[in-house]
Each structure stands twice: as structure tokens, then as C-alpha cells.
Length: 193
Image (cartoon, rainbow, N blue to C red; front, top):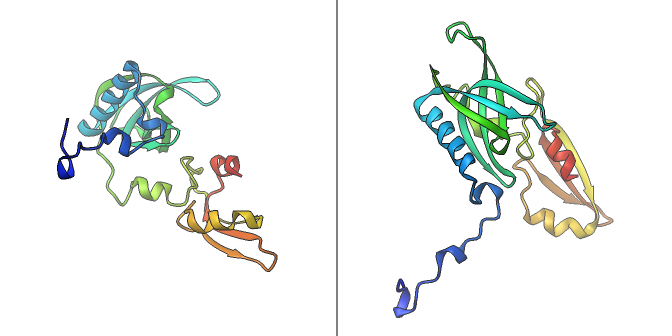
């Protein structure tokens, strides 16, 4: 047993912090293997081939540049850029997409390399800057001004909870709370509403 202050037993660190995010829960062995291959692809800058089940259940096989692991309340995700074409020199790149690691059915290393994009071309913080949550907007879309009105009972919650960095809040004469946001209107925002 570790000793803390004044010879008292040190508290059990696993009880001092409780992470409820699904991404931090123990993962099945097959998912750990997938994560190992994704991380190796990121570090070694090698393309990986994914067999992926879409949200609707459609299976697809694609070759991607794995770029960033994202830990979220709903699980682990990887931001990757898909590659079109067999010849790496001639291939074109898709836009950045988010893939749920839990829906990656197979992940295979390839012998093809890629160059990790420079920060002025790709930064995950910039990618999510105008998003409510994890859903990425369609390419070329612009953030919108969103104004939401809540009953007065929501006022304290809205004053003390940052739902998005762009948020501002106010209260009208009737006590209603108004929340203003500038972001992309994506499915996760609609679901939250």
C-alpha cells in the first residue's frame, strides 16, 4: 500500500478520476489490433486498407492515410483521408473523414507510404472548430448563426456550461434564456436539440 500525507494510505487513484467516455473503456482484442495498425500507419506514414461498415451497415473497402485518433464520449474514431487510384503517384485524395474504430471490420497494413500533411493543410482542432461535436460538415459548407431559446430553468446551466467556444447567452425580460452559436448544423447538433 502506498503511503500518502502524514502516513495515511494514499487514495486509490482509480477512484479519484472517473472517465465515462466510451473511448476510455477496455477494448476487445480485435479492436486493439486495429488500433495498433492504425497507430503504426500514422507513425510510419503508411497507408492502411480498411473494411468499414457505414452507419447504415454497408460494407466498403478503402485505402486511407490514417492521421489522428479521436477520443470522444461515443468511442474511438480515426480521422483519415481516402486515396483514389492504385498508383500512389497518380492517386487523388478524398477529403478528411471520420471513421468509428468500432465499425472497422478489418485493418491491413500496406507497403505504400504517404506524407503527413503540413499543419496549414490539416489540423484536427481546425477541422472541429466550427462543429458542435464529432460530425464533420460536408466539404465547402460554411458555419451558420444558430439561435436557440430555452425556458428560464435552463439559464444557470447555459451560463456555466460551454457547449461550443462560439456561444453567447442572454436573458430576455420574461426570463427566457437565449443561446447563440456559430457553427455547422450537423446531425449531432440536431440530435442534441
